[in-house]
Length: 267
Image 1 (spheres, rainbow, N blue to C red):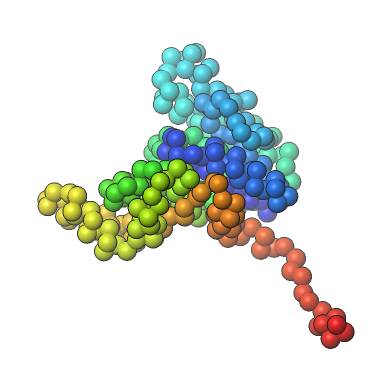
Image 2 (image 1 turned 60 degrees about the vertical axis):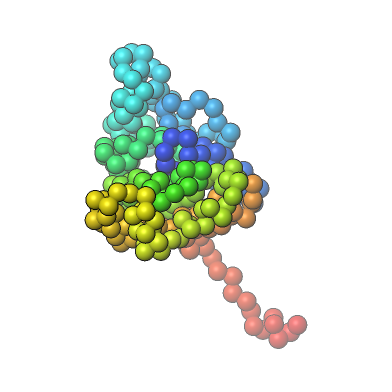
């Protein structure tokens, strides 16, 4: 049984920084993980790249040869990856043991997770390879200053969750850059009634029914819970990793050490 994190979120939400900090933390505690780059537009990395999609296809080459723009070129690159799941990807995965822990650093275009089936098929392929997979959705905490942006972030995360059908962990990234963390406390695990009240204050009266429907939708999918991540604090990274490990059942098949009661009596 292998384990995998699919790290997604809007562009600039701190996905690569998260992957780098996670790798450094695991290296410190002597835990083995491998970070895979799935962004064909990536340039620099602060972590050792175990697998790089740019070896298969790069965005610059696609834009130059096909005359596509950045968004169209990225979709083309990921569709090419989808066509190579049984070839290039399998060859790369064959380099790792069955119980490896993989972290996939993904592109930031939301349509890849909500409109096209590329990552859904990617996830299904990992499952067939006997991987437990969890989505780690990062949202920049600096944008969580009012309820409208909070709901927008929840809906984007919900769209990816419905498409991928995976265990989902929502993270507020860049907490180390927030000057007043008390402003965000109301949005970490808010009550639906609070969200609706705040949303109605900021929207015109004719949107009241829409606001109620949005809050009910977010609440019914339990999408109103975010975990704050401060990369300056090792305990924060450790807590986030523990939540993700629980989602993918990492370590549950490890041997449990049982105390010998005879030894206790001899002491």
